[in-house]
Length: 525
Ligand code: ADP
Ligand code: MG
Image 1 (cartoon, rainbow, N blue to C red):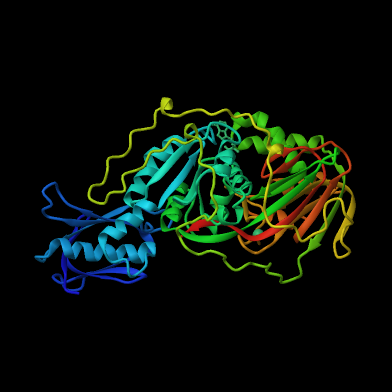
Image 2: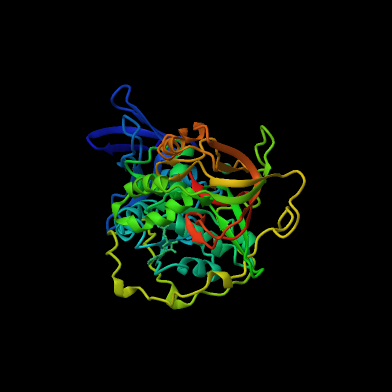
């Protein structure tokens, strides 16, 4: 390894030797005595071979996102490597391939450039953007932050702006997924919920649910994105979009637990949902839904409504039964069924209708860094018809281990009947950006955290409970019982009160909920 390069970043210039391993790139100065610089491979987003029109003077440009000194955020550093030897092009290509292999996990034997280019082009993302989520910035985030990062990483994408509820779910139900390396949502947890439910409405659900998912937080509720950042000790608040997009680029899929919720209505019809975060009934669900009216107040709407709700406190009569997890039970994390980064479906799936998908592929060419895309114009988007009844959908998925909702409660389950202030079952550590609801939860621990507050809790305790989610200390308030379970059944004895699944209102009727351990996959670094 004797290729020499001129290293140029910010104001630093050195003549260096370059070493690439699976963990780091080392730049060793050969001129100034002891200058050495090491870049963590995980922080490298992309490496481009740059050359001018006449193909002269090629050089490498590396996009690098290290922590700042206080580790509160990451910042971009561009490193240019200009070859000093006479085989400039070959030297550049060699280093580029080494970096890509280490950072993207390409197989060792893909040594030639053309194969690499083909593979890169194959691996595009499908990105779903909800322009109405949160503060309404998802479109701008996509064009001004996500597209430039993906271009640096040489990842192409097809983009769809969702036009309303159920658009994403319907799209995922029928879309050909074989050409995608993953599905990304730029929105809140609600759109992720739709994507997962859409995937589980496919006949090829077993393969489809293995497609890695990415989430770039732009909603009013971003529990999953926060949970991911928390799990990998990444800074979040200063730049959640960067943190989340880096996960998608690095693309190491990690399995995450899911909940299946079966609901039964008085007319004996049933409906299945898959929930990524929560199932709630009573006080918190009421606040979630009723405070929607105060949406314009932003985050403080929750607190205001909570105080109002405590004044006119309601309790609800219900029957709660659950299968408690054994102490020390780590859940039953299943082995990974599929590992390849490239998703290949064996089932023929219906092609999406053309009017549903607006395709726009980012230039995945490595020679020139393309200009940022012009913003998408509204008239480029085709609007499909939105009205569709969720109930009408058939859902697939694994068969249940537990007796049906109509059957007897199994003898090893605990049953409590009485008045409750609330029941709130959560899957992930964070159910909102600053809401650490289940401090002990791990993404794949195979456990649902069932929180119960009975009807005799005092207003003082409840106030304390409602004001301590951010720190996760609500679990220490005396009225709060937090029970790790594998499954539970909730049977409201009244039609009053809100029942929510992932924060969305559903009819108030009995539900049975079970854990599906390590069931879907998300992109991590
Ligand atoms: P937020 O956290 O802001 O509510 P979500 O991602 O949870 O953001 O979005 C909420 C819901 O908005 C989604 O579940 C989806 O059904 C719906 N939705 C998607 N696209 C649109 C749109 N263009 N207009 C209105 N609602 C939409
Ligand atoms: Mg869990």
